Structure formats: C-alpha cells, structure tokens
View 1 (spheres, rainbow, N blue to C red):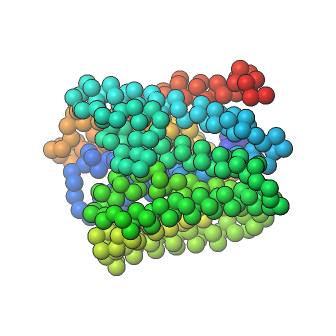
View 2 (cartoon, rainbow, N blue to C red):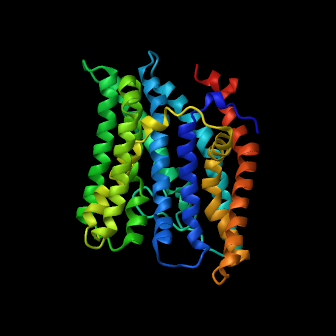
View 3 (cartoon, rainbow, N blue to C red):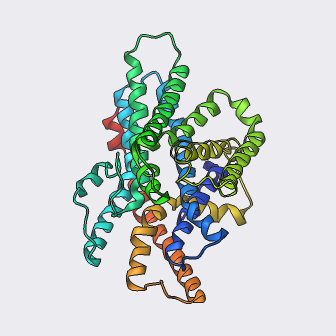
Length: 378
C-alpha cells in the first residue's frame, strides 16, 4: 500500500489510530472473563473516549472543509450538495457493506432482525431513541451524518438573511448555536428522564443523535480558531494540551474518588460529562495538528492503522467478533487461551480491514474525484 506521507499530518493520524485502538480494545471485554479492577474498568470506558476522539477529529477536519466552502464566492446549494456527495462517497460504501453483512449474519445465526430495519438505510435507527441490537456501533455514524447535514444547511440559510455580519462571524455563531442547541437537548433529557444506570445512559443518551451533535461541533469550533487565528493556534499548543490533559485526567479521576455515580448525580452525567471530555480532547488539537512527522518506526504503523480505521470500526465488533464468538465461544477459556483468542481477533480485524480498505473503501472513495461526478456540479 503506497502512502504519501508528505500529504498527511502525523499528529492527526495518531489521534485517529489511538481512537480506533481504544474502541477495539474496549470490546475485548467481551472475550476475557469479566473481572473487577482498574484495567477492566479502564477498558470499559476506552470505547467511549475513542468515539469522542473520532467526533472531535472529524469535526476539526470536516469543519475546515466547510469553512473554506462557505467562504468561497460561489457558495450555493449546489456547492453544499457537492460537499455532501463527496462525503457520502467516503462514508456510505463501508456503512452499507457492514449493514448488509450484519443482516446476513443475524439471519445466519438466528438473531431476530429489528422491525424498523428500514431506519438503518436513512441513519435514523438512533435518531431520538435507543439503537436496536443490530449493528450497534452504527450509532456514531448516524450522528456524523446528521451533523454534516445540519451545519452546511444552516450556513446556506444565511445567504437569505440581510445582515452586516461577516461570514467569519456567521460561521462562528452557527457553530456555537449548534453546540448550545444540542447541550440544551441533553438538559431537557435530564429533566424529563430518570437515568437508571450506565447501561441505560449508554444506550439512551450517549448514543442518540439528538443529544450528541455538539461533540462534532466542538471540533468544528477548533477548526475555525485554527484558520482565523493561526498564530494564536500555533502558540497555545503546549498550554492547551496541558489544560486538556488536566481536565480529562482530573474529571475521570474525581469520579471514583468522589463517587460521582450516575444514580446519585444524573445531571452531571447527562449534561456535562461528555461535553467536558470533548472539550478536553479539543484542547489537544493545537498540538497534534502541528506534529507533521515522526520516526519511520512509529510513522508507518500509526499511519497504516489510521488509514484502515473506518473499516476497522465497522467490521471489528458486530461482524468479526460476533462470528468468532459464534464459532468459538470464549466464556470459559483459560487465561492463556483467552490471550491467544485476543491475538487472533486483533489479527483478523487488522487483516480484513486492510482488505476492505484496499479493494473496496479506497476505490469507492476515489470515485468522487472522477470527471463524471465533478462535471455534474460545475
């Protein structure tokens, strides 16, 4: 696989690689015997943090594209549509492939399909309700799809508003409006729903579209600052990283120390826990976005994992691990055998993800640069 390292930012590849590693490792808890302790507890929240990193990083990268699109003189609904089409060539092929495979696996192993299976076609399986048991990791993909429909649409609507505000200010205000709006939805949820447990919270708030779009727009906000205040962005990288690390570590350390469990502090968990983590991750972007290279020993594997991360995300759990568990149950394995099982699982995930990326995902993504697609939006 040929990789042009000169066109990549290593720090952002590192964030993406760390994110997918956290997500994949969090699901190893389905293999190893359930035990209590620091490491199992850490693994159980690793997936949450991994997805938050994905959200912030996605918002940062796509936010820069949206900003430049909005600033262009020919910004119109056609250019917004072109943005969507280009993004869909990146996201939809893997999603629908994984969806079809999940449906096939469910039928094969005898799992009942959701009654509203059609919702998956339009990414509304978790719009305002819990994700069904099929392809459960798709929840984050729905959030991203709606996030990148809402923002550009609102920016397009500003073309019909008579205002003396600059496009910079309009972009900023729209971004902050979205963050505020989807913080309010969490507040409304908290005031009207009695969170029963972390399991309930995980399914009914953390993984529901109408409560989570703000996570991506913190990344968009960071993109805005990096463009309009480049010198500030450059000079705060170490301070911002330090603050982000302190906030993240402090928040997640104080929870067990002060016993801030969800049963006693639902408002904290429903409204503030995820945004505070998101802000902490956002604060690491000035540093990571300016790390352009690394030694080859680190550069190559990190970039490789980053490139196949989307394929890894849609394949690793509901497809690869579910089939492994079906054919080779791991519940009563001895410790050494469990370790071998994990190694086999990780190896299969990386290998199959590479095949999907190399022979399906990348060719499909490259179609967006074809003359046929470009000519339709001239």
